[in-house]
Amino acid sequence: MADDRFHVYDTTLRDGAQQEGLNLTVADKLAIARHLDSLGVGFIEGGWPGANPKDTEFFRRARTELDLRHAQLAAFGATRRAGVKAADDPLVAALRESGAPVVTLVAKSHDRHVELALRTSLQENLAMIRDTVSHLRAEGQRVFLDAEHFFDGYKSNPAYALEVVRTAAEAGASVIALCDTNGGMLPDELAEVVQAAAGTSARIGIHCHDDTGCAVANTLAAVKAGATHVQGCANGYGERSGNANLFTVVANLQLKRGFDLVPREALAEMTRIAHAITEVTNVTPNSHAPYVGVSAFAHKAGLHASAIKVDPNLYQHIDPAEVGNDMRMLVSDMAGRASVELKGRELGYDLSADTSRELVNRVKDLESKGYTFEAADASFELLLRDTVAGERRRHFQVESWRVIVERTRGGELVSEATVKLYAKGERIVATGEGNGPVNALDRAVRMGLERLYPELAEVELIDFKVRILEGTHGTDAVTRVLITSSDAAGEWSTVGVDENIIEASWQALEQAVTYGLLRAGHVAE
Ligand SMILES: [Zn+2]
Image (cartoon, rainbow, N blue to C red; front, side, top):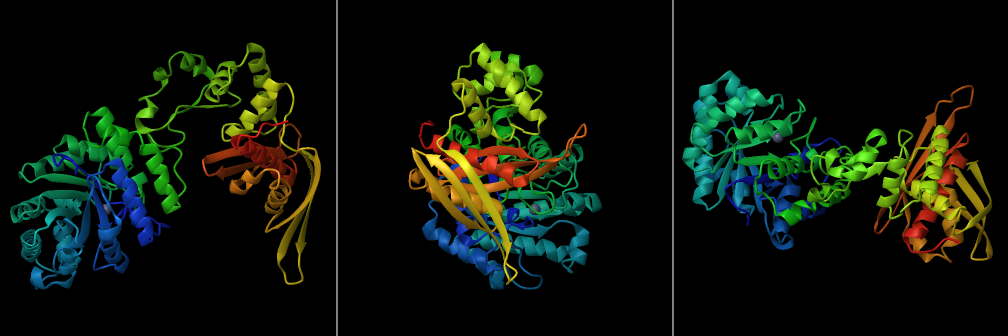
């Protein structure tokens, strides 16, 4: 189990799950818990057993299905209701029976919330905290307290807010986490309040929301002011603007402040873990996320390219490998020869001066027509290979294609595509149906080639983006299509541009299949 001196406490499964559009099944929660454990967090808050049947089931299944190596599970719940004993409150019983070694109790620390939301007296609220904490402690659980609306409460009535902290600590709560529930704080004022709370000699934790864009900065400020327990969510999930991004917090504290929070090898898996969690949540990963985003170490080189070639560390704040990310060069019309050479080297090619000059000219020419290679690495690599080979090499040649879109009498729209191809010396005619013309073309191509290249069954078209580019200098508008495909090992993107959207899609599709075959180890003819 993790060192107790400093806590990394994840609340993705409870507070993070409040994010709009996020809907986690029990199996999803178990999968996310395993990923967080492999990162080495100390605590995973699983949910609110008793109040939410799914969360009750999570704790029940966790007992047999979760084999945590680093983390302890925490059950979240409220202090007892006013006017009853903690021992007699069924919701407190559910926390006791959850089997979680830790219970995190949420309590009011803002006087107005006690009176208006809880509708009880300030004294009874303190009694509820004292009674519930000591009851659970006596039953053998460790207790943390989330002091809700603490910072706003401190502004309203500082003496009462601090009294809540003192009461919980005296009753046996081992951490009092101060919550910026409304997320409105800024680092300097937050730090002053944390310092005041730390003066009560209770152990202080911090729980921040990102409504001012300062959740991570506030968390770091709290740590500097004395907090030794940080809460946050994977990928910054959470309601409104989200919670403090736990990955950013951990990377900052460990790499910039010298804290020893998670094993080094686990930190080097952070990018993979962050993406694996997005696979479970089905939330598109934020490509600009600090440390773990696809673009976090991507350089649109231009001016800097030649210097990056000499020393990449001049242009990045850490070695991306420390968090399992990579430096990436973007090929754009800003770029010159140096960045094309760098990109080539990244892909494993040592380009001669002539080849890279020709490649730069081709990239510039295509970009002037509306292509973009920044988001289409696979198209760039095909262009590079063709340039190196001095000819266009493909696994199959296209004779023709045709798509029909029909609105049936029943009002249903059906697309049917026919492709005529040559591959491995054969002429192939194949037909595919789909819910749209591109889907039908995709099926027809696979249908035609799968017998010769069975690996294509693994290739899947996972994203399709269309953008209309305004015409310039009297030319017509053109359509740019970006297709992202995947196989068991990863993803790649290809681009096509034409005045006709289906032709643009076809270009991207044809390259997507070609690149998939290259990945599978087939040499183009
Ligand atoms: Zn919260």
